[in-house]
Length: 119
Image (cartoon, rainbow, N blue to C red; front, top):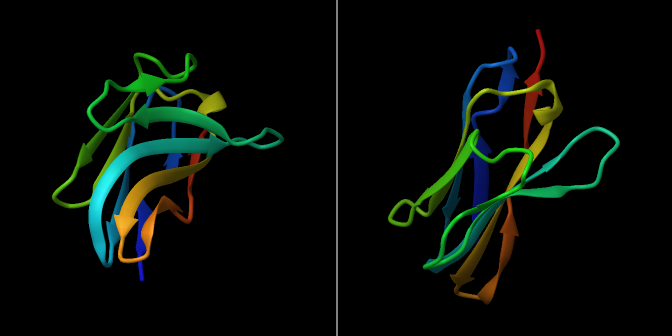
């Protein structure tokens, strides 16, 4: 069985910072693409940051220069450092990990962590 656990969300003032973490556990053989999505109130889920295997990172235009995605393959974890947060960054953030496990290769989702940017 594979578990994906997210942490790090919370309430922060505009201009503040947060670091989200997402870690996978279980019978995992390999990690591939890792991504962070967010769903803001009244909006569809959108891709925020993408870390492809062997490739360069990609970011939504709205977060470029403020968010940084990184990973630790030994820990099977992906992180999202968020700086200079704005009210429009408020939403539920989900990690997505492309993993090869005992049951084959597929995408796994975290449970979501709430980020609220407000004064």
